[in-house]
Length: 509
RNA sequence: GGGCUUGUAACUCAGCGGUAGAGUAUCUGCCUUUUAAGCAGAGAGUCGACGGUUCAAAUCCGUCCAGGCUCACCA
Image (cartoon, rainbow, N blue to C red; front, side, top):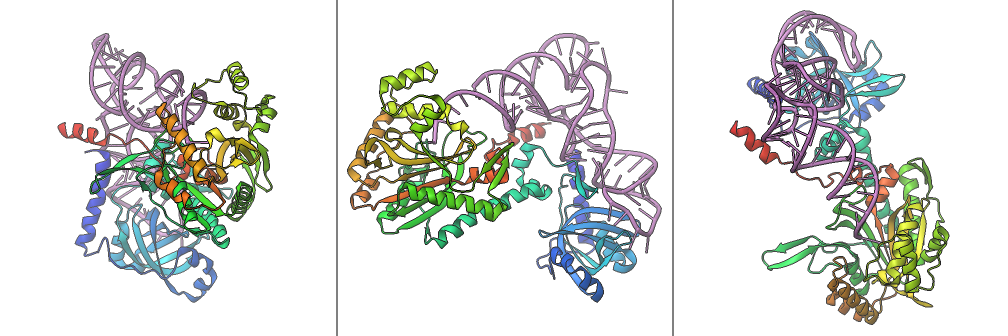
């Protein structure tokens, strides 16, 4: 018998013993008079009144001493020590207590008191089991040394933490806290936008055509319609349809799916917020980005100064705004402002940048930026005025048709937001999408596809609009000081373990 | 995809050619104020998988599986 089965077997035996004692091991209804946090907050009053309280929670520690015993019970608000005496709770209750295992959900009825060693506890008058844990939780022990918590045998295996996130949440409060922060960040975005008269909407995840970004999609199939559908790579084109439809301020928070590589900052599904505002442009979007991010930092983590990887990142607005061309000049000395293909190509070659034969000067300029500038933008920086060539959905500048009104926000060397003065000229939009289609034919799997339905919508008239997208996961990483996206996703994508193979082999033996 | 690296008991780890180890957890006994409770004893492992070398493999070699770091690719 494997150890695993041995430990589980023992717990199953206890389950049976409880049943034999006519104890409901998984009762339907449970009574709780207060959360443990409330109990602790009312310590003095409860000791004075000797009032009976009922708490519930998971058993996190047990210390049995013959005819008495201690334990620690935790609910979501706090934990408290329980004290169980055989002569107080009676034989049957004490028997139930003895059949407790670490990880069981228990209900304790009792009165508040302070032990001889000074610990506020609850002295049980009645004990119950609310749900038995058949599988032993990993053992983590804590000790308080000089007021600091020292943890032993922490559940720290990264792979296990991701695969069994429920254990990570249960055993590592600091990791659970990441997801509390994440939730607060998202609800704070909502609060700011809702106060600003934005309407939250939901658009299709399953799309007959995908668009709004350069990326390879996931493909799925609808049986009844017998058509392939794509999981959205962005919400952009649907949100613009809503602007056309007369909603002046909309946003959507949701998952996008991109069938591409995975690394510390890319998960195949990730959360983005996209925001569209009629009668606004990319300058307004910069103001909005600053407001959302710096205000949220203050609201959620209490400061807009973040110390991360030994860098001090200052989210206090205003943030630097600089054009891509100027930043390239600043970091390399190279002046690409003339968009002269030969000149730019020569520079790329001299720096060892690989040249895609289909790339025009705009694409090359972007590559120079990515190679020499991106990683150096530690403080929040709006990189503005992108080449039109790489921005098929953004409006050109009035005085320079090679450049569009677009920005990307960089913090700590990586992209956090992308925004445009949205292209609303349907003739221009059609030409741009058609030239993307040509790139596709030349083998660019990430080029946009022509979405006739979207173009038709735009032909009815789309107001001048500013649009903005922010990567939520990366922002959560920044505020919670995590370097891996997996740490801020509850269930990051992992390769499945080949359990079936293992099991088959086991059975054969 | 390349390089480096990890995988041993439920958890955290040691062992790195000669009969599988420790602490915690679990079980048994003692124990009515403990708190990483204590003391005494016990059980628990296909040493990620499959091959190879060897008298002998957790240990050396190869392939594979799953992670991590990093570079490349990619928004």
